[in-house]
Length: 120
Length: 110
Image 1 (cartoon, rainbow over the protein chains, first blue to last red):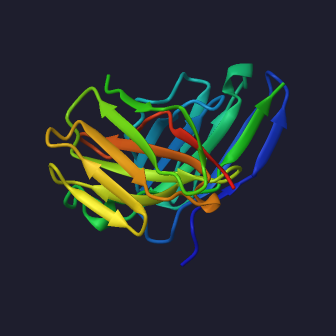
Image 2: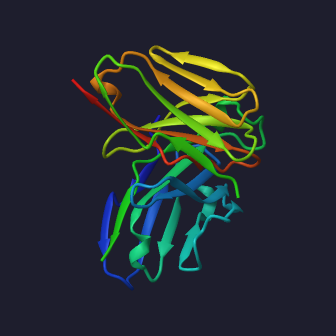
């Protein structure tokens, strides 16, 4: 079974530019999450999709961030315009279980390799 | 909002020594998960604890979930150089979002 994949692995852009990150979840996983780790701090939740719907987007830092998951498969996270403080590693994760028992095996989130974003 | 505190931030040990990292949540958790991130890698799921007072073992790793479901620990017996990495706890309350601790970066001197 292929894991979660993310593209690109690295991105270096200048302040004010736009960047789009992509995540392909594990096939069949309805739940897709975006997280961010900034400057070696904790990994912070950004948002959660169930299929194509945004279930929880309370972690999105501001309106410069736009996440989409058209068709309920892959997801994109666009940052426009990028600021210096957006630098960090953006992780995507997916899980299978939807509406099931909390703590069940299908509830496990599998992380992708991350995209390291550097804004200069 | 919910916070998960994790200590220590860094731990250096000699190979063969034991290692423990602790997590404490500001709120009661429905479950807690542990991840390991190797240098340059991504978080890899280790285990999930759901029940109050639960203890699980994976070879040299022992995971505990507190009776109040607000704290957890990961203990590694007789560390090896392959244990190097950052260990994160991540708690879940309602919904599916994980709240991560800041991680404990473990280095093992051979």
